[in-house]
Image (tube, rainbow, N blue to C red; front, top):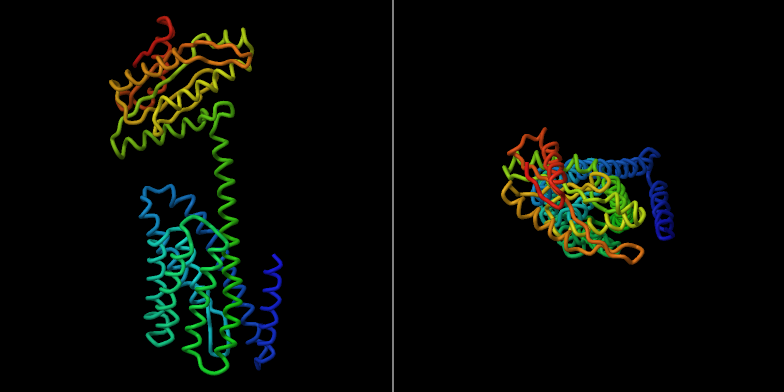
Length: 388
């Protein structure tokens, strides 16, 4: 933070010195107004862009490459917008934050996003903003390409490192300073280089801080959301999350026509475990069974604790024939598993299970039919698997 304070003091001194040189007070205040506009635009875009990305883009049907393309176009547009929020460096020199969208695009989407954003920014600067000239070619096209190359060399996709970000930012500023040196004449080039470097450095550090804040906020939100959908004892999905997963799986079937089976599992005589050995022993059994379920089923299968000693599994890509073998394997695994109690005792337990397959059974009856199959398995003597 002390570095930031010193930087602001130096920048303030440079700007105030420049204001004393300007003939009119309004010209001096225009830099402050432009800086406020730029930082406001930067903050707004980062926040709104993060909301769009997390709430819509990441949840869309786009594949990873498609998402990166969308990010590239969005950040390219952001760079174009920044060209209209310039800040005066000298009487004849104006600058903006167009390098920052390129750095952000490489961080969020790698080469694909960075390349698209760079292409949009450079083409617009060279051909549409003020026409083709030496300044537009150096300050627009070549500088944007150098910034992209630097970003690809230093910034890692989705890995935010201050040292790497600062190195990329510094070299990007240096590339622009060199362009200023060759395109400007007289003493104005030195003044422009110093003021521009300070302003863009502050903008870049501010951008890094914003990205870091959004990343940490997103991580915290994901942890809270995950905790809200998890059973506190077993770590499996809870009943609320199961309803969401169930609907997602049904929607997925309508797109890809891949069947799935609902398997309901209940521990036989679980009440006796609690009554005989205590609730701590019952919790230990539930936790160990959850681990066994994770080991038995594939990563794409969704496992939830529906309540008490009852579990439900959404078995992906599974028809009514396959589920017989899968459920029987689970029954055998539980029957042969030693469950260790807190007292040091070992129990051998069994389960009953019932299944219902979609789309053989209508979605409105799917859960009810699986529950009925489970009921029949328990009524027929337990330690059995029944199919609806």
